[in-house]
Image (cartoon, rainbow, N blue to C red; front, side, top):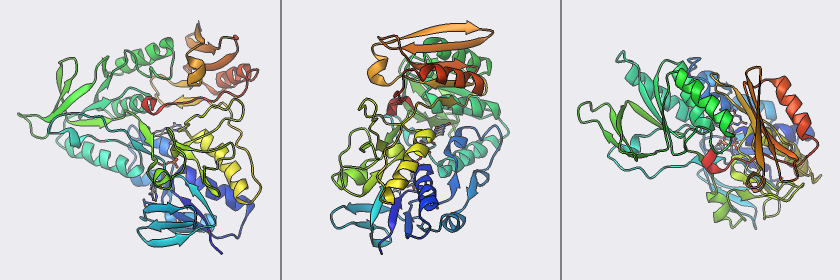
Length: 408
Ligand SMILES: Cc1cc2nc3c(=O)[nH]c(=O)nc-3n(C[C@H](O)[C@H](O)[C@H](O)COP(=O)(O)OP(=O)(O)OC[C@H]3O[C@@H](n4cnc5c(N)ncnc54)[C@H](O)[C@@H]3O)c2cc1C
């Protein structure tokens, strides 16, 4: 019997596997992954420096433990290079494998900005625990000289702001660069972005907004350091540069297999791709919202959980629709804790935000042209307020926050 096969051991791959095992204890399950198959919660990566966590401390279970827990075969460090959807086979660095049904959960790749300069290739980005370990090593090798590390972060979106706050909390000197005039500009309304900017500046983070890095060069006077030249002409020194300008769904396997793709691998309301018996979810997928037919890319944990439950059931033969529900995104900036549901792009163009300030809490609600609430943003955020605002929105269901690759 050919196995149910999952490509990828991130949150998406492992959650489908766990959900499938709740329904089916015996059908062979094969997980093929390019990494070591350790399980970790990726959101912790932008919150772990201030807690001085080693990369190994973030991994809660290794591949052997995962294989035992979900009764699966896990092929570590094995890259899938081709999917043959007609003959139901996979070409991999460990040979060819047949599958019964396939789940693609290959995630996304960091966007690389076209930056000039002889040190442009030295820029770090963090999208997995190995990247985190490398960034830690990079910082430690500089900090071991006994000075604070000057870190320039490119991108003041969700991930850039989280890293800025976290690395500042770990005692580093942070400069945050973004072409927008405010942080979190693609997701949050102005009052929330302003509150975040103030909080980050009070934390000692230098904001360079309305500009981008045009080149990164080795510092002539300090070969360990860099000179970052901004598009506005400013030049400033850095010991390390971290890019957080966003992620792009990894479409390479899907496109080579001629599956339908746009900004992600297109899936229908059940998570199935344009090829029979091949599903996709997580950062590589572009979902179909059954409520309004919109096609959101949802690179967050909550949609993975929902999609994984439905896909697992479909893998057992009971075809099940993914019920995408609005779920707040928590921005993990302890200096200014934010929760938000951004309106879907096709609605965001036409509606408007309303802002109220109540006992030091900023509350913004987004209304569409019919005056139905389709999003909110709050700071400081807490669970009670989030629930109250979700209840307010419940009168206008079917809205799913979307983050574009630029906004990550
Ligand atoms: C720093 C950071 C903080 C975040 N914080 C939050 C947060 O607070 N809340 C939230 O909701 N979301 C957050 N996110 C987003 C969330 O973590 C992701 O949406 C989620 O982890 C994506 O999981 P995934 O399994 O789709 O992809 P990944 O975790 O990227 O997994 C992809 C897997 O596919 C494997 N793979 C890829 N190509 C191949 C191949 N050809 N062959 C074999 N294997 C392959 C990889 O090795 C890997 O195992 C954050 C993301 C980052 C980067």
